[in-house]
Image (cartoon, rainbow, N blue to C red; front, side, top):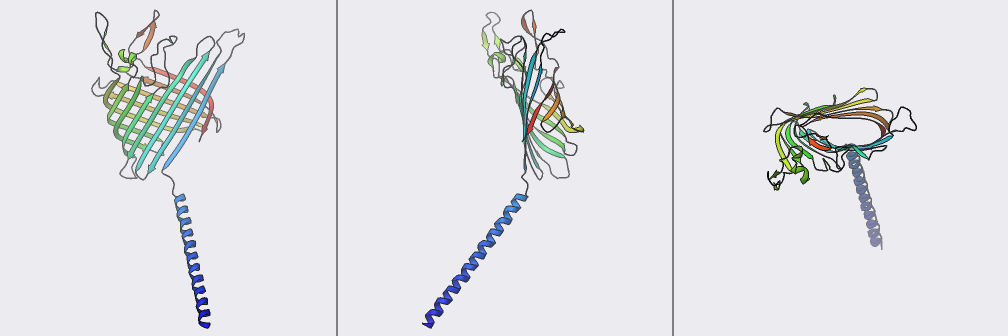
Amino acid sequence: MRFLSTTIVLSLFLSANSFAQTGDTLTSKKVDAAKIADTLKAVPSPWKKENIVGFDLSEIAFVNWNAGGNSSISGLLKGTFTRNYELKNKKWVNELIVRYGITKQDGVELRKTDDDLQFNSTFGYRKSSTTNWYYSAKFNFRTQFTDGYSYPNTDIAISQAFAPAYTFLGVGSEYNNKEKTMQLYISPLTMKNTLVLNQRLANQGAYGVTRAVYDPVTNELIRKGEKSRTELGFLVMTGFKREVFTNIKMENRLSVYSDYVNNFGNIDVDWQMQWDFIVNKYVRANINTHVLYDDDIKTKDEVNGEQVTLGPKIQLKQMLGVGLTYSF
């Protein structure tokens, strides 16, 4: 009996000791897991995102106004969405820009004032963290949402979604200075592709594509116009964004491109400048100017009731707005 009792007591002791060791092991594992979780939380994500949406509204009304005038109301919906990746000497910047504006004037049909869909993506790599120069590859896409017209003629559209659409794809070097918030991109090898996916516009040779060929006698269509045009050229892009005064920010973007094959030295210019006057977290006023010059874009004008195609001209758009913005 003593032997049996001793055996039982010894077995219970060993079991308790084993259970205690197991408990200690589990507790130790829980502590290690907590430390790992805290370590993972402490490591910042290489991805940074920013979403900014806004709506500008302007209105003017006249009732028995002696000096005359037309009542009007206009609105602009806009958004900028960025997704940036940065880890050690690698950087990937992605930006989506959307803008759409309309206006309604008393006695005049609804008209479009702004229409832009743009996506930019740049990947860069640098040899050392002490330099601001990156080896870079850049992609840019741009088009619009809805039909565009040469007002007051609203019967025939002069532009549509993907008519035109532009893509730029190139490699080069980029200077990126975070402290001065400025960038300079130089690409000696950039492919520009112009898409006109509307056959009527392509047949007209709109936006630089090869126009259709017609029989000179019967005016019958011999060959359809091409819906795309590819160029290879030199691209320089620069931009900076800074707070010039308290609650006043200025952003400037300039892009110049010249084709190697067709009229090298004839430069296409895309220049945008925006001033933001911040009232508070949600309310701000802004002034935006956009200058374009593209030798392939022919302007149109109405002469004696008919639309006539003229040569390229400097295009200018200026907008002043006050509205709401929300960042998330």
